[in-house]
Image (cartoon, rainbow, N blue to C red; front, side, top):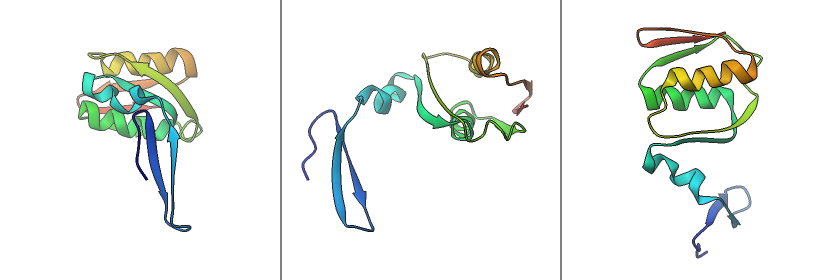
Length: 105
């Protein structure tokens, strides 16, 4: 299967089928410019990505929100505090930051 610009490929191991679909490439390349883009991503996965990006440990005590999916984009140089404040204002979370650990409630 030959991929054209703006497409991604997926392999279904069970059926041995390769499929392609058009994508918004900016979602997959935003990291090059230091941007964070979350599209239909579970909150628990967003937190994992934030941990890696900001070199912190995040403890999620808000288990109800863990599987909820979100769409959000943050420009380069956005602090982790600004990102968490966004979620706090829009999705009713609470958080505390101490040293290299963040607790989400």
